[in-house]
Length: 181
Ligand SMILES: [Zn+2]
Image (tube, rainbow, N blue to C red; front, side, top):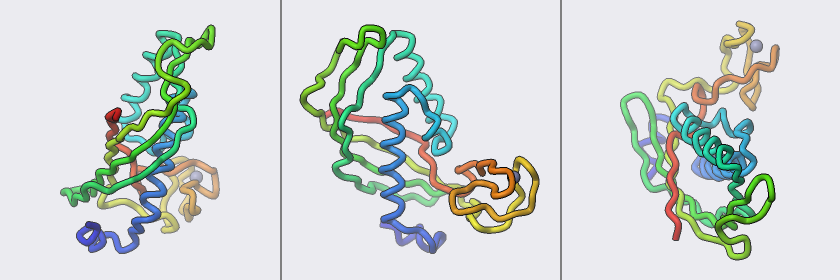
C-alpha cells in the first residue's frame, strides 16, 4: 500500500505514522472536550481548524460540554494512499470507543448521551504532506528570528524557540468525519 509513497519518501515509517495519527486523534477529541485546541492546532490545516472552532463555538453558545470520556483507540487502518501533484494524501480509519455525552456547563448535569456505556465510532481522517516539505534537522531560516540554524527534533528554533509550521515538514490533518455504530 505504501510502495508508491516510499519511492518518494524513503524515510516514511508506517508504524510511526499510525502512532502519530492516533495521537493527533486523541489530542483533537480532548481539544473538543476541553474547548481548547492549543495542543492540536499545529497539526490542523485551516479547514480543520475552522471546523473544530465552529464545533466548539456552538457548544459554548449553548452552554454545553461535549464529553469523550474513557476514550480509547481500538483499531487504526490505512484505507488509501495517494500521490497528488503537490502533496501526498493518506486516508485513515480509526475505530474509537468512548463515553459520549453532553453536560450543561453551568449545572454539570447530563443533558444528552450516555455516561455509562461506551459508543463505538468509525472516524475517517485524511492526512496530507507537501511534496516539497522540509526535513527537520536540515539547515533552514527561522521564520521568526531569521537565524540560519538547525531545527531540533521537535520542530522548534533552538535560537528563539519559535515553532516551524508543521505543514512545512510533517503530515497534518485536513479532514475528519465520524460515523456512530
Ligand atoms: Zn528563531
